[in-house]
Amino acid sequence: MNNLAVNIGNIPLKNPLICGSGEHFIELEGIEQALKAGAGAVVIKSTNESVAAKEQLQKTDYVMLNSDFKKQSWDFNPAKDTSLFNRSGLHPEPFEKWLEIAVNADKMAAKYDAYCVASLIPASIDKLIEYAKIVEKSGIRILEVNVGAPHGDEAAKGAILLERHAAHIKEITTKLRAAVNIPLWIKLTGQSQEIPAMVAAAMESGADTVTLMGRYMAFIPDIETQQPMLGTHGAYGGPWALPLTCHWLVKSRAIIGREYPMLATNGARSGHDIIRFMLSGASAVQMTSAIFTGGYGVIADALEQIEQYLSEKNMDASDLIGLAADHVKTYADIECKSENKKDYWRDFTPT
Ligand SMILES: Cc1cc2nc3c(=O)[nH]c(=O)nc-3n(C[C@H](O)[C@H](O)[C@H](O)COP(=O)(O)O)c2cc1C
Image (cartoon, rainbow, N blue to C red; front, side, top):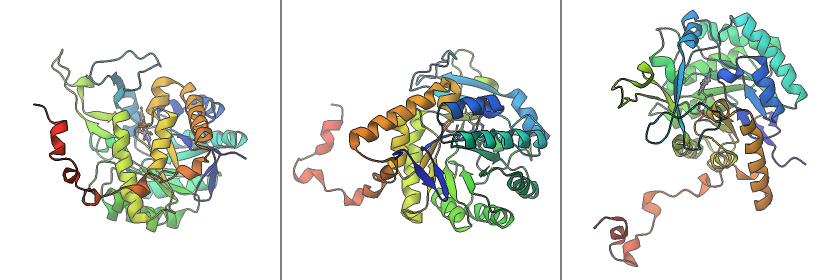
């Protein structure tokens, strides 16, 4: 009996570690490394029809920063508190070649009792629907559509669609669901005031799960050069993002209920982080930067950490889902401490 197993709708995953889409999954070799290391699923680097989005990959740049915004060496052994700031583009190959890689990757994944998930980031909705149908016809078993890529606002006009409203999520998911029957994962932005409503809209329109939530756009001035770090705005993520994603997982679960599976992304750096996301309501977790910057060994290490935790707690991975989320209180529920201890706040205040 595999106590790491979880279900995402009708899809049984052998463990809750999904490798999120990124540059290390442009080629089959990277996907194979992740499968060999034991990932439950790997999401291939996303594509769409935009030439500008492909070209943007040639303008990409990355920097790892410590908590004082000092550049860290790119040695594939980052400290746990390292954040990643970068520009990114989409898969460099034409759609047909991308599809060939994705088909082969999913066939290979099946041999590892895993999945390779196709990933589309729309430029236009019509082309998105056309591509989704082609993906389904190709035999690929799961499709993720990322409608929340942080680079949407900075990319060339029309290259990447970034949706922030529940009504748009409903419209796009409804169209996709009418077009294809394969498991459909909708990846959402964290840059919206409507996150739980977007989750509910995706669920009600027939998505099998949502992936919550994309990174933030950021601007980092370099105090040595007094210039923008990397010259532009960029997407920013780090371990600090985990509690923010957890917050929205918990808030979304309160609206959509306990049965609907959610995937977490943005902030997982270890097996313990995957557990934190699951306790907040995620059924599985997408990990990207930790593997991109730390290598494929991060996958086996994280799985080992989860196994050890489950054996210490005598639990299965699926038992973890939402445990902390379902015990969250409001501020109003908290008893007033000053009844037992006068001026409690003074303990926390400088004198
Ligand atoms: C270099 C890089 C490239 C990425 N490319 C994609 C992509 O093509 N498609 C996508 O859906 N997400 C992409 N992402 C987002 C990640 O899959 C993930 O959602 C995000 O980085 C937050 O998770 P993390 O904290 O584990 O990195 C990319 C992230 C990084 C760091």
